[in-house]
Length: 155
Image (cartoon, rainbow, N blue to C red; front, side, top):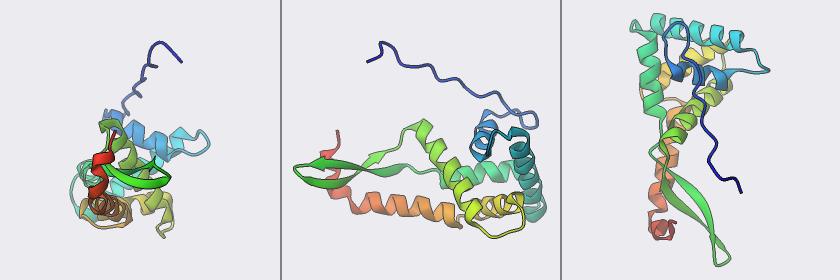
């Protein structure tokens, strides 16, 4: 076992918004090391969000991320031969990670011409409290609520 925990290296902030979270989002969006393409997709999506809503696209994106961020999740734990779904709070770093992954995953599943269109539509839907990514958060919370009886098994 290692002596000390590995240091987390924070990604560099992006050029347009000077935000580390944008870079983190783009890193998850990226396929095959194509970071410039991923940035182009993201910026196009934010511009389309601005056109659709008439508001600042960056602020709408931040609101969408906040709406999709989960507070609790269920974790499987084996106790006496049975597997229980135990509700647990989500670590702050994992909250952001999950919300980013859900937004990207469900925007890929949407139908549209380009990835920028799909992402823009999912961002708009999530900011309004609808869409597949928001539904995933609601389902996660509902599952945790349903398994609240097993909370005493928490480690």
